[in-house]
Amino acid sequence: MDIGNNILITGGLGFIGSYFAEKISLEKKVIILDNFSANSKEAYESLNGRENITIFDEDILFCDYADYLPNINTVFHFAANSDISSGVDNPQVDFEITTKGTHRLLTSMQKFNVKNLIYPSGSGVYGDVKETTLSEKYGPLEPVSFYGASKLSAECFISAFCHMNGLFARVFRFGNVVGLRQTHGVAYDLIKKLRGDKSYLQVLGDGFQSKPYIHVEDIYNGIMIALENTNDLDSFDVFNLATDENITVREIVSEILYALDLTGETKVIYGDQKAGWLGDVPIYRLNTNKIRTLGWQNKHNSKQALSLAISYLIKHDFS
Amino acid sequence: MDIGNNILITGGLGFIGSYFAEKISLEKKVIILDNFSANSKEAYESLNGRENITIFDEDILFCDYADYLPNINTVFHFAANSDISSGVDNPQVDFEITTKGTHRLLTSMQKFNVKNLIYPSGSGVYGDVKETTLSEKYGPLEPVSFYGASKLSAECFISAFCHMNGLFARVFRFGNVVGLRQTHGVAYDLIKKLRGDKSYLQVLGDGFQSKPYIHVEDIYNGIMIALENTNDLDSFDVFNLATDENITVREIVSEILYALDLTGETKVIYGDQKAGWLGDVPIYRLNTNKIRTLGWQNKHNSKQALSLAISYLIKHDFS
Image (cartoon, rainbow over all chains, first blue to last red; front, side, top):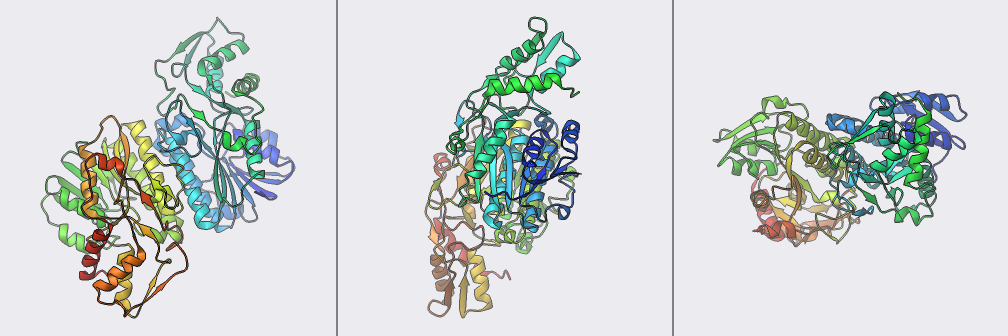
C-alpha cells in the first residue's frame, strides 16, 4: 500500500498514535487530531512545533472532517477508548468513541475520497477462548467486553466500506502494547499504586493472567512491513500483531518491585478471580504466522518489552 | 429459556415481527413497538384490537423505554432496516437503525433489568464466501454490505452484554425469509415490476444467484424449538436457521411468470453481474446442523416456501 505523503492520525497524541506521528513525520506530512483526553501533555510537548506535524484539538465525534480530510492519502485511526476497564460500568463509552467514531470517520473518508485506512484492533474481538492460539480466521467471534465488541463492530463496517466503497484497509489485532508514553495497562497501574503507598500492592485478579506483550516499536515496524508487502488485490485484510510468548501478572509484579527496590518490602495482595475486571480476558494467545510470513519479527519479546516500559514508567511522572 | 408472559416485540408490525406477535399473543401478553415504516397497514389491521396485543407507534431510536420495558420478560428485537439495498447509497441507514437501535435497546434492557433477548441476524454476517457451507463457528467474518456489518455489530454488543451484564440472548442467522406480509425480497420486487409493465421484466443480476429460502412459519418454529431446548449455561448462543437447499433467481422468475400466466409473454432481461446489487451475496449456503440437532426441521423447502410467498404476493396489493 502506498500511503502517500499526506497522513492524518486520529488520537495522534495518544500512546500509540504519538509514536506513529513521530516516526511518520520524518518523511511525510502528518495532521494530528486529538481531543487531549488521554495523558497527552508529554506527547504534545514532544511533537508540537516539529517539522511536518500539525496538531488540532479536535474530537472525532464532532469535528468537521471537511477541514482535514481533503488531500489526505491515508488515515491512521488510533482515536478510541483506551481505558478498557472504564467500559465495565458504562456501555456507552466504547460504543460512542470506537463504534460511532469509526463509522463517522468511514462515511467522511468516503465523502472526501480518502482511500487508505490503517486500523488498530485488538485481541478482544476473539472473546475468551483460553489457551486456543487464535489465527485471524478464528471463529466464532464472541467478544466478552464492550471494548472487544466495539473493536469488532468497527472492523465490520471497515470490511463493508472496503467492499462497497473502494476503501483499502488494513486491520491489526494487537497483543498488549507497552512502551514509552503508555497511559494505561497493568505496569502503569501498579507503579501508580506504589507511588501512592509502597507498603502494599493490591493486584486485580489472581496474578496468573497470562498475555503476550508487545513494544510499540514492534507495532510500528509490523504495520509498516504489512503495508509494504500488501497484496493489492485484497482491499480488506487483517493481521494479528503480537509476540509469541507470554508473561504473567505475577512476573510483572516481581519485575516492578525489583526495579523499585521493593522486593520483600511491599506486601502483594492478589484477588481471587482469574480476570482482572469484568470483561478482562485473563489468558489469550495470538497466532502471528501471517505477519511473520511477510518478514516481520519482533525485536523485543514480552519480558523485554515490559522491562523497557517499566523503566520508562518509573522515570516519568504520570500521576 | 423461559420467555415469561410479558413479551415486547420491536418491529412487531413488520413482516417477521407481526408473524411472531400473532402467534405469541395466543398465549402471552405482547407489546408491539413499531414506527410504521414498513408496509405495516395490513399487519396493523390484522393485529390491532386482538386480545393480548397492544400496539404503540414508536421508533426504537427515540422511544422512552421506561414506558415499556419494566415488567417485560423477553424482547424479540425485529426492528431493523429490512430494505437491504437501501444501504447501498446510504451507509447511515443500517448503522442508525440496526447498530445504534440495538445498542440503545441493550442499554435500556440493562437499566430495566430485562434479561432475555431474541435477535434475528442474517447470513450477511458471513460476507461473500461463495459455496462454502457456513457453520455458526465460521471465521473470518468479513461482511460485504452495510446490512451485514450492522447485523454483526449488533451481535458483537449482544455477546458483550451477555458476558458483562447477565443478559441471556439467542441469535438466529436467517436464510432469505419469505411468506405472508413480506415487504421486500426478490419475489416481491419482481411481482411489483410486473404489475407496472407485463411486457418485460428487468432482473437484478444474472439470475444465477442461488440462496436458501425459508418460510416465516419455519422461522417461528425454529426459534421456539431453540428456546425450548436451551442450554441455560450458555448466556449467548447463535443458530443458523435456513433450509438446506437453494433455488436460483431464474427459477423464481419462472415460477412467478407461470403463476401469473405470463410464461412466453414477458421478455425477461437479466443483468450481467453475478450480484443483484452492490453488497449482495449472490451465492451462500448455511449449515443448519446445530438447530436440527434440537429437533427442528423445516416444513417447507426453498421452492415450497417461495411458492407460498408468491401465491400470497399475487393475491395482495402492496403497491
